[in-house]
Amino acid sequence: MDIHLKKLYEKLLASYVSSKKEDHLYSVQQLSKWFMEKRIPPDEVLNIHVGAMKKLFPDLPEEIKSSFDLLIEIMIGYGISYREKEKLVNRQRELENEIEVAVGMQQTLLPAAPPALEGVDIGVISVAAKQMSGDYYNFVDHGSGSLGVAIADIIGKGIPAALCMSMIKYAMDRLDAPPFTPLSPSDILRDLNTVVERNVDPSMFITMVYGVYDSMNHHFRYATAGHEPGLFYSNETDEFFDLEAKGLVLGVSREVKYPEYKLKLAPQDAIILFSDGVTECKVDGQFIERDTLKKIIRNNIHLPAQEAVEAIHQTLYDMCNYQIRDDQTIVILKRVES
Image (cartoon, rainbow, N blue to C red; front, side, top):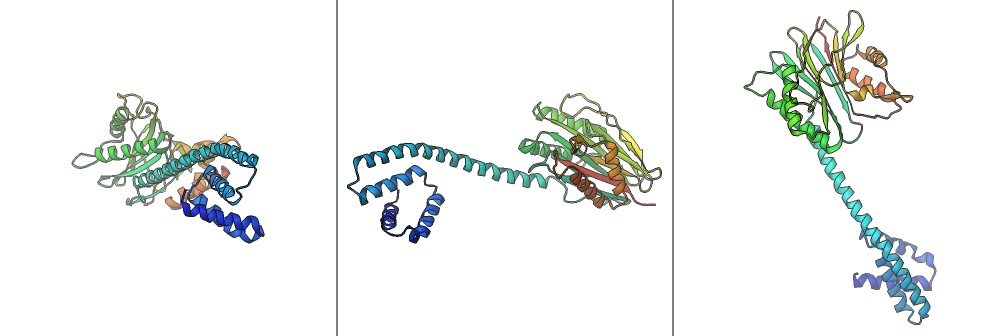
């Protein structure tokens, strides 16, 4: 311990015990603050105090001095606990810093905004239940007025999920990179399944839906890998139809075929894709029913797509008493030309 600090403490103690204690409260508080800032454990503080007492009062009875020794022994245990706590606090800070970095990196994997596609209004929202999300979405330019759209849900959270997310993104970038011809949704899921099966721990699975919107003909081709079935909204009949969702989750088996489906959109028809965090909202202890979800979407489908996804999420958030159990991602593709 600093010799200057010991002398300062002796001086403060001598003044404190010989005058009105209220006169020194500020100095005591400042010294206490300094001890905490320097992370001086309680047993060391007590050692300073005992040393100062023995110096100021050399004629103290031996019984009093022995009681100091007992108190020091007791406080050593506190000091050890204090140091262990400090280690845990420092480790926690390191983990929080690492998570902040991972969250920042994760955000760079997601598109900054929906892309522009002639004749199609696109909206997307993705909200994490905790700091890091297990949901991933992406848009891929297939050329000739065609846009690929993907939503994936990584069964797992935290940094492992973020690592899986980055793997999915760069695998998709590689599959659609020039000079290769853009693959079909079925082929993309098949190739991604191979990547996941080879590189991801067997305890982690990834569900995914991948579709391609052809804005020239307003066709939507898609395939799914164990993902929550999306919805097709028919403006003419004001009805919702569940999208086909046959296909094994990514990473379970190497040899998997993913069926592909095709829809034709009329003006104001819409495709609504989402992660299972949307349907796993709990209202009064029960999962939200798909019919309830359809009503919420119907109430907002007339809005511009971005406003619609935000309104849908907000409604779900309100209904669930402002508690999100799982990450929520919603994408709307709506044909707007006449």
